[in-house]
Image (cartoon, rainbow, N blue to C red; front, top):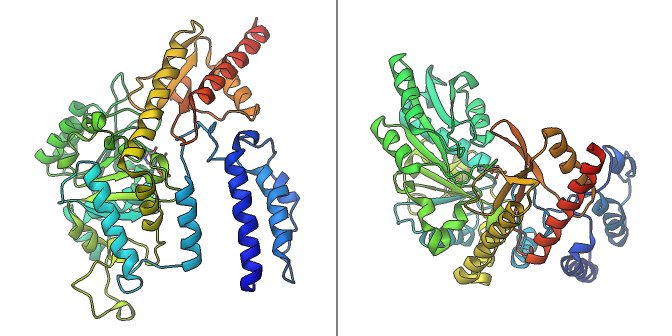
Amino acid sequence: MSPEEFRNAARAHSEWIAEYMEHVREYPVVPAVRPGEIAAKLPSVGPEHGEPIEQIFADFQSTIVPGLTLWNHPNFNAWFSASSTPPSVLAEFLMAALNVNAMLWKSSPAATELEQVTLGWLRQWLGLDDRWFGIIYDTASISVMQSIGAAREWIAPECRTKGMQPGLTVYVSEHTHTSAEKAAITLGFGQDNVRRIPVDDEFRMQPELLEQAIEADLAAGRRPCCIVASIGSTSASAIEDVPAIADIAQRYKVWLHVDAAYAGPAAIVPEMSHLLRGVERAQTFVLNPHKWLYVSMDCSVLYTTRPEMFRRASSLSAEILKTAEDGNVVNFNDYGLQLGRRFRALKLWYVLRYYGREGIVAMLRESMRLAQMLKGLVEADADFEIAAPVPLSLVCFRHRSSDEVNRQLLSDINASGKLFLSQAILHGKFVLRFAIGNHQTTEQDVRESWQLIQQCAAKLAVVHK
Ligand code: PLP
């Protein structure tokens, strides 16, 4: 591609992106496509000869976009609503052009140093002291796997040479994100060695039951290794009693990982700083800028007070990777499985600088205000009920009738293409989850979404009479 051809194509692409961002509400948030429909429109063998970029771009618009679920849409309120803000999009563009690999300091000094600097800023905004060492991974799933790997190194260092040892046990709650259990499976702990501690009425791990489970395991000669506590659980955004869990972790010398993948950024808001109570006694803490900190997929930040455990668990010295600066610099590949690492710090830096702490606090506060507003709308409608506390920006609710009606309601809402919600089972009942967090979601969006939900419910009521 000649520089001229690239310039023209880049202009056309950036124009399309700007138009898309401006008119995003005109697009359906969920596509009305059947499995296989998109693939059927594409050739089953790759092109023998190169094709013009204009043609590829045209097919992207006509074939691919209509088959996309639009995560950056203000009415995407499923799972956890996320944002790829304009500064993050611009940084991704630069990252692709530079194709930097942030594996070693030497492989791109500014990438490593920017990662250290931006994670230092974020750490200060979160009120964490300078004992915390930050690392960017792709996702919270990888972060928790690396953390449990470091925990194993701490409790049973012989695993590194001899392989997995019997009886090492991981503690999660019934509502902990499945990534923790997946990590335990991947690392060879085995599902039988994951304890799922029951939750209380507000979906929080019960510390007394955690302690009982640890006592029982010790009595049986097992080795408690890691506890995963959640601040902002996936189903219901429950905030667990981290100080009480940290007491237990300390008493029994068990590694504590705090999963704040979604909720962590909210602690930047001064009146929400209590969210991180107890975290100062954890060994690791994760938050995802790609969930609620306005950075595009993917970007997960893990902080640890025990970086040497990550190095001991993950580093190997290969001749080809040795550099003259070793010993004086951080080589981030030493802290995880991945050698090649994307330059994710650039998009975090762009976002933190463009909005500033003040701008980010304002956006986070607005999401939480809209969630309280929606909670009020649900409570004001006698046909609906709130299904879980709303401490942050997730509203769980249900129609007061049956699970069957709620399932159909979710299906009808999502089929409208105007709103995308997800579901959870809370206290044995099917509930709808409305997650707010996209930077473009306005009060009007939320009010219109609530009207749509009410209209869908009213139509169902007629059918079920
Ligand atoms: N932890 C929590 C609380 C989550 O809600 C999620 C995903 O929604 C994860 C972890 C996993 O995040 P990721 O997709 O970054 O692996």
